[in-house]
Image (cartoon, rainbow over all chains, first blue to last red; front, side, top):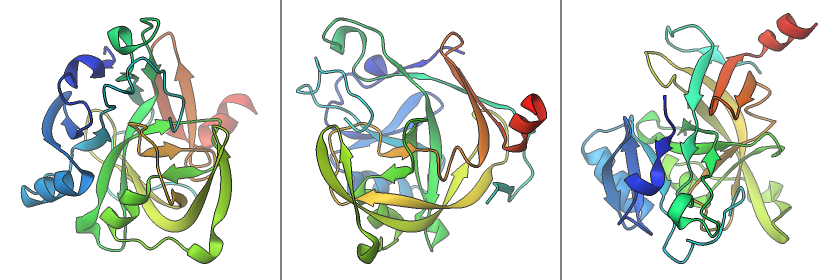
Length: 66
Length: 168
């Protein structure tokens, strides 16, 4: 199985909070609160959440907590 | 404290494929491709319906499990301010407050999961990291035998006893 290509998947979603399931972005929001509100309204429990770095973060390799 | 099954599951090992970091390739200052050992882990507070799943960085160099402050709010736990511990990370000192939560891990493919109780340190402030949870030695590596392969770009999760079976 190939590593999930997050730079490609998350292009255009910089700074957003996203939910991923089966290698696809299924929801995105400006805040974690808004994203979880949306996921819970749809009773989605099997998606994993992460924050997409902003364009300001591009050009800096992140280590651990960033 | 050993991970216990709460439902039937496919047998270990569970293989998890690394992900390509968001700051990788064209986004990286030198154009390097960066891969991370990441697994989806669910944090469960007092009310199971408020459980939240995050892509968590599996970090063998981290002593404890660490999480962003917003997660405590999402899952409805109140970290213990009386047990606050200063931690130095990346040259900065940040405050972390522990809370007992259940952690749940499911295989990348197939049914079932394992769930265990762990003390997670919630930072009072977070950074711009995409990973909201770090899985460290206490609370994660003490639950499983974890094997990394950069070549395969995968990590394997097996029972804690597997290490003894293999090496002792």
